[in-house]
Length: 133
Image (cartoon, rainbow, N blue to C red; front, side, top):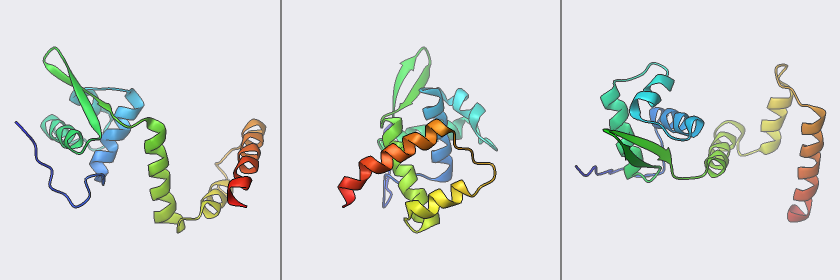
């Protein structure tokens, strides 16, 4: 059976598709049953399998067969997907401002920053300066 995906933006993911992708990135690869275990308010196993096929048609996952089950894994590296997700969060919640996002994080009483992380962030900012000047 060939699944046709007819959407305006095939790279856009629904909330449930993002949850499934999060599960696959966390596990590395998984079958529908394993993904189902990770989902809040889980749908049926059939619904998860359908969404996995849609994600494959959109080009986000690939599968291999293991016995009678399909095992799915993300196509894009985790880092690239993380960068894309960060851009969406910055745009959606902080008007595209990294400064506002960091300020929100650093003013959160639950946020912690170790001396090693602080040092690494300072180094990254210094390295970024020449690109922006």
